[in-house]
Length: 255
Ligand SMILES: N[C@@H]1[C@@H](O)[C@H](O)[C@@H](COP(=O)(O)O)O[C@@H]1O
Image (cartoon, rainbow, N blue to C red):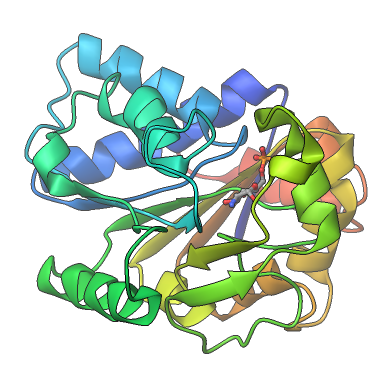
């Protein structure tokens, strides 16, 4: 795992955007894995600046990680709407090539199977952006999610519902269920890029990077991936025990 410690949230986004941009320059028809929440926002901003400067993502496909069950796609907190506003429009993605799980599908299990098939049909995800929940979740894979899990319905923890209440009018409005790519699904992506910012993520980052591999900390599954990069600002890195070592590696890295 590569650990990159940066000064600020904006710098984290710039580094993540650089990784995505290089992949898109190599393969303009790549498949992006899109995340929601606050963590990827600086990456989307930095990537949008690169698109304004000439990077073409119009032939890319994209799949979002997850979606709430039961709220309409045009609800401001729905991940359909978040992905549309934060990623599709600023990155000038082709909306026809961007898919988000349908949390109002008549048969949620079939929706999840179709989603897995669509990712396979697209040739798999080239670069997957990830945030991390304060409880160590990735996507909406809450603690105790199987490390081999595939896309499915999950129940949100109270902590995640409270963390995400800021996007709703009241905490009671946060759905109790979601659809999410599984940890096994996420691990199939060819490259993983996790961004974390702020002191409130420091424990989750330390557990994911340095703790034991555990379904109780779903992000620790990144330890199983051969090409995972974790980009953290100083606050999110503050509880890493080998922080000096990660800095030494970065300082010694060939240009
Ligand atoms: N489903 C999303 C996750 O994909 C995201 O990583 C997490 C962290 O959110 P934030 O980046 O806003 O802290 O929030 C939600 O639960």
